[in-house]
Length: 425
Image 1: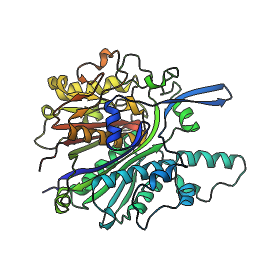
Image 2 (image 1 turned 60 degrees about the vertical axis):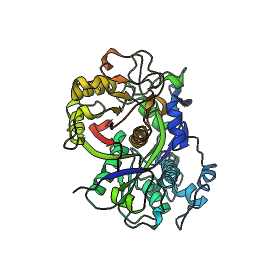
Image 3 (image 1 turned 90 degrees about the vertical axis):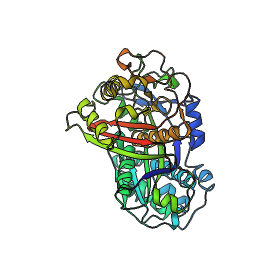
Image 4 (image 1 turned 30 degrees about the vertical axis):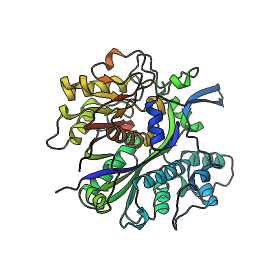
């Protein structure tokens, strides 16, 4: 019999704050915090909207010293020279998540670490390539700091984990893929505890200019006069997503382990995970057929579309994704779709790439536990093509959520879907 898998700890590093409950409360209040940055180019000055986590290298240790540490306690010179920003965000979010879980994870054996990231050490790559181009010597730690595995290494070091440490890169679905992989490992009995993370920090010069020119037309919103209103999923006037940074960390446990330690805090039970790819049909355009396949695979036997109360959507605020995603839900859930609450966390946090799925899965789990669903910000004029589901608009709603779905549909045709339900002992 498959092991039950519970979400027992959550930590978040987002543009609207760092922590757990305080971030969820801010989302339910509809808060957002975007900024405009400018770069000089040969074609003149360019402006971009982005979301930045309020954590600098200078105040990293102000957060870090709030927690207890073991033998893997980080040193300032190591953080400065041997970690990327995504790793720093993940490490802080991880400390919140492990404290939230309420047990000494450093005393456990075979704790696995699953980390999803689209790009990893983006600023490290950029800084060192620029240095090389100038004829300068790059950092001695350039390559080991830039690779995706660096993020997981810092988490494993901090919490003294000796199980598998696996970096996962499925573009914007990376965080969701990491949680799904951790879920499957516990379900089949490979381990009892997994620290699952999604982290990215690509709001750099190269990242913003790069996404701004993707496929010639670009994918980013140009609403620089109203940065806090730029991310507007499902709205008729949306014009692209807002690139942001962040990290989400979830502690997953088998129910057996949770009960043996007399655990008190279970946000939700993960009951299904489905993934698919679109056969390489497109680098940037989602494919309805394989999006549906991931959704179908995520549903365990005995659970049907009518059982779902809430969907935390991928909801990117792009012209292509939003109507196709809502069409998926209309077709998959049928008449029941009209009663399913749907929202987009990206409306307030922007698109954190590999971090997005993990942050949004954490938000989904908190919604299940607390019976509260945050609104989709800036949804002022619903696109007729996005009708047919119960959008959460204006303010948070109180709801009895039995089953919830978290969807991620990424560049490269990577699709990942989680299904979770309220945990009942």
